[in-house]
Length: 331
Ligand SMILES: [Zn+2]
Image (tube, rainbow, N blue to C red):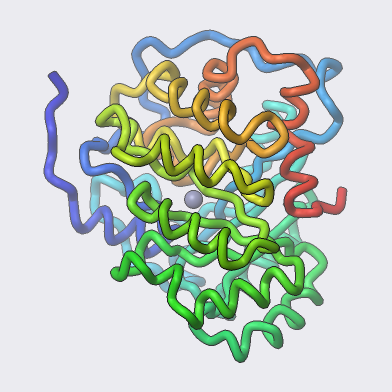
């Protein structure tokens, strides 16, 4: 039987501080690259079997010094250094991934946006940046979006909703007003929430039907515990809205960090593809946060294993076309 551990508040705080990737309470810290029992040997498709564009729709960079981040506790030490474009480039070229979308984290400030754009502009493979805007100040959102639009790689907005103490934060009036501005400017929104928030995501979709949203990390079911109540129903209801997409990302850190195997993720991936279909799901690594439980390559192989034998056409959508279409990536 799996040993349950108490949440490590320091670690969780650190994760919140860097990327808003709080993890499941039963998740256990793993060393980067630790051996994972039962890991399959699945080869990625050969280069000539793929579209020329292969996209990782969700990755982060950070630098604790430049962004003034707190040091992590020892058990998350693997994340306590800078993660910058040259390192990710080495990971993706091995797998034939051509392009990525860089997603904001902490701190959520205009200065951090500028830091992200500088990293992206120095890395040709980064084709989009999902930045931050103060959604609680709708009067300033339009002006900020005008500024962000001057950045050629700006493709979307995220706010780390899951860390807002108030569960109804996302449906507060000023935030809904800001979502209307995003919709008006045709800027998509990355939603990072836990299963408890899915009902509120539905309300947003009802109230702002022109807003394109993508659900980060498959809605964060507690994979280590075999799921979360309301998750499957919430996903089904959200997927009925054609402007809602889903990222197949961030799953290994919701699973048991030491003992996960691809088959733990499969039912969640299957439900997502069942309800969203093959045109509205997209692969994301969540690197470097994934390093708590798996290497980049292990995440990549796991998603191939979860999807099983799918047609080349479907594969090309999940690993490229859908992200390009959703974010309007310029290639
Ligand atoms: Zn992330």
